[in-house]
Amino acid sequence: MSSRVLSGLCVGLFLWVSSGFANPITVLNSSFESPSCGSVAPVTCAPANWALTGVSGALLPATTAWDSIPDGVQVGFANLGTLTQNLAVNLAPDTTYTLSVWLSRRTTEGQVFSPEIDLLAGSTVLLAMDNSNPGGAAPTTNTDGTYNWVDWTMSWKSPDSGAIIGQALSISLGSAASQTDFDNVSLSGTTSAPEPGMFLLIGGGLIGLGLRRRFAN
Image 1 (cartoon, rainbow, N blue to C red):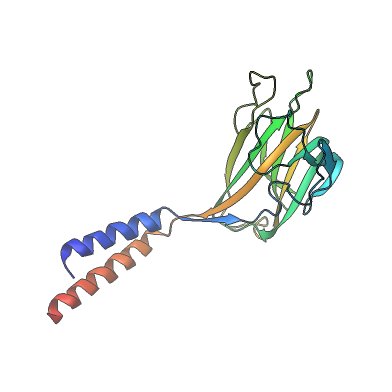
Image 2 (cartoon, one colour):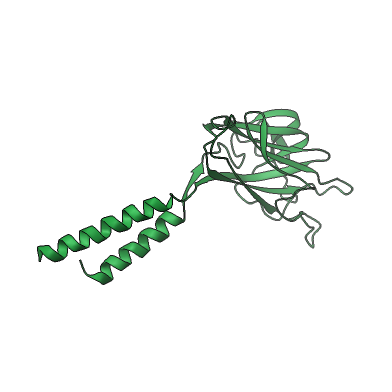
């Protein structure tokens, strides 16, 4: 094995390992497309895989509600209510979780924009996005009077150990006041890079392989 090839392998392994391991976490019915609320808009229905409280659900909006929707034709909404999904995964140690939610608001004048978005482990709130701690900019109006959609994203890193580790993860989408609309919900977990000893083992193994190949020749 030439020194150039060996160096290339070392660099490639370093970049691969040091970046951590990002894994998407399944959010069922993440864009509120199931079931179909109907064909005549606007109309609401109960979205599959989400538990509802208060005034909340899925919405097939009228074509004049928004210029476009982030994904599909239906969105989720909460008006002094919540949409909650228990995920089929538990909190892992030393992992950075990143939650992304697209959101907008009603076109009705005078409505208050007050989203409440939480990622929880059991009953413990890991991260919260709201007007006091937003994950992005607030929706603004388009020239035709409709609101645009904005992507709110926030990350949280779990500890190495503790009672919270192993608790079931869940997502809660709500509104403390007037209607907030949601779409294209996603969550990922990124494990931290291995300890420095891992790099030494990898490097030592590559060097040993190179030496063996050299003496074999």
